[in-house]
Each structure stands twice: as C-alpha cells, then as structure tokens.
Image 1 (spheres, rainbow, N blue to C red):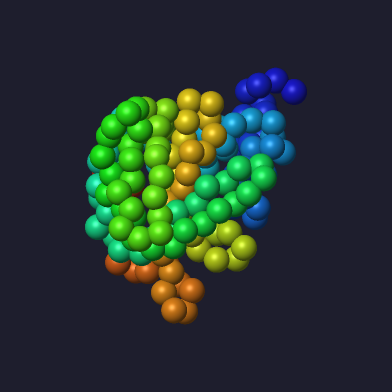
Image 2: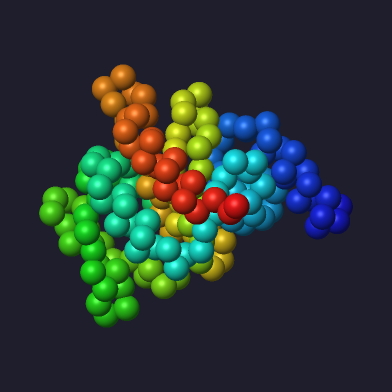
Length: 167
C-alpha cells in the first residue's frame, strides 16, 4: 500500500466517526496522532506558537478536564486550569489547588480542536501536539450534572476553534 492510499484509507475511516481513542487509531494505522487528527473531516489545527493565546482563553472557562495519555496511563484532572509563567525553560503552572506542573511549551508544534463522539458521548477537546506528532496533553470541555457538555464552554470552544479555522 502506498503512503497516499494509506492516507486516503485513514481519511475514509475517520469520516465514519469511529469509536476508540485517537491514539488507538494511530497505532492501528501505524501513524502519528497528528496524522489521525489531520484526517478528521472537521478538526481544526493551528500552530503551536498559539500556545499562550489558547491557554489564556481556556483560563476563562471554569472547570475543565485536563488529560495526559501515554501508553501506560490516562491521567485526568478536573478543575480550573491554573495560570502559568515562563521560567527555566518551562511554562510553570501556578497551582491554586492540587494541579500543578511544568510544560515545555516550546515543544508544542500544533494545537488541534476536535469534536467527536467517544464512548457514545459528545466530546470537545483541545489537543496540544509535540514535534513527534504525539499528544503532550489534552484539555476537554467540562460536563454538567447530567454528563452533558457545558453549553457555555462548548460555545467558547467553538468560537476559539473558529478563530483558527483557515479561511
């Protein structure tokens, strides 16, 4: 199979809105997470240089879900995103609560805005991708008491994604 036909097959597959994590699909197609997202019909991708702009906007959203997905763990934090500042080569999270850490923001090559069904539920998330095409971390729109996406956050997510959509 040529690289072009593999890419076309992935695009066709992604149009079917498949279940499973995007990382599982990347492994199945032996490609990067970035390539999987690029194959999605409605995903929006922008340059990683927009890291600060995106982070500052999400600070205004209230409780979100912050997720790190490696081959060994999917770790989630639900709460307000902390502000951060640069120092010693990192974007240092200034934790107000239990969530803190240090992000190498300079490694962010792309930022993707993805809406899709996962486990039969609507999701909307921002995926920060490194130069290797893999997720650094993800930020998901929060859910209300009925497990529905928070409408106000979803509106903000869509406005932000639209801002980065190519004309």
